[in-house]
Image (cartoon, rainbow, N blue to C red):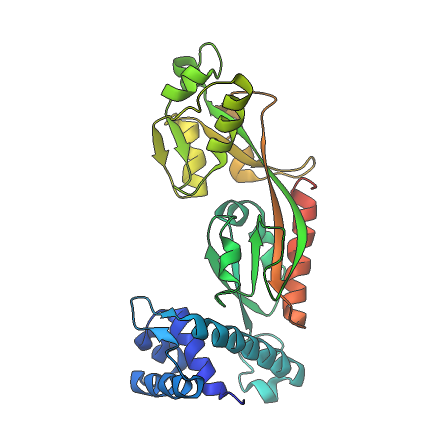
Length: 313
């Protein structure tokens, strides 16, 4: 079956922008025109493709066609770049006369704050649509069609994707000196960890609890359940530990010879609770199995920066 490229473009815009009105603005058409294109695509598909919620959400058939729409958009943009300014029709958009290609990428917040941005900055001619989620959940955005690539802790590739190793992000339990003096005068005992306030990134953040479970298993006691601060921003999470709100997993730690300024510049104000303790998170890059020079360039940049800064697997 042949799918109408304009209708696919409308579907991708509606999902990316979150509403028919916003999609119309991005496509420079009326909301009625967007609605007509979506209805025509739904008639061709034989079912509902988007739920008219706020924001708009694709249905299961909608996700299938959304992936197709993203692929058509990417390959069409690459063809325009190869053909030059005459094909793009927008010689002013970039130095080589071709309109930048947009690549949706899912990444966990710590990677985004620590090492991903320098890698993306080295990829010319690409605009990035970044989606942040926990490293255990970024991979879910691939089959949904929301992104073309994801930095994830899941090694096994999802259907239709490839998976390559990036490296390890290491975290260590740490606290401000004032917190150590108040709550851990005898060290990080099970009893002290059950009482001392803990800083977690979000309710899906399992790093601190992984260490607590390992500690409790080694001691043969109950797993501590401390009071928690939820701070869903990497910079503010580290600042909360530095200022003494509670203890948490400090990091990510860069490999020898590299540094993460956000972590390293504040390291003098914090103390490791256990010099031998660490929680390692292995990262992988999963991306659509699609022959694309743009995706290859993005992957190469991410892998190069990961080799430079992350600990090896």
